[in-house]
Length: 114
Image (cartoon, rainbow, N blue to C red; front, top):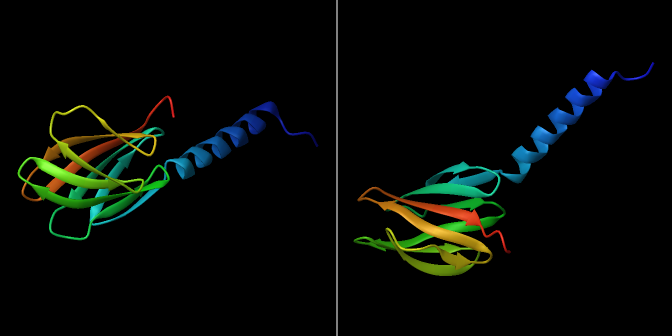
């Protein structure tokens, strides 16, 4: 008995959705993440050993003092300040969204040319 086009399309869609979820998958410790296909926002808790695996790379909070934050993304350390242009690390653009006494929020996105 042949598979109907509707059933075939539904199966293809389900497989595609599962594949995208795996590609955008992430894990974290002392951090929360909000990921899409090409970018993630990571909110690190301060005062703990905070890290997250996003887009296939690890992002870690190394330290924070005032409005200056040091993070490690894809094995490269970056020092960021709020409002500065994105810094490059391992084919990713990294920006500091915000820093408070409790949290540090960064955005990591794939560079289109990488």
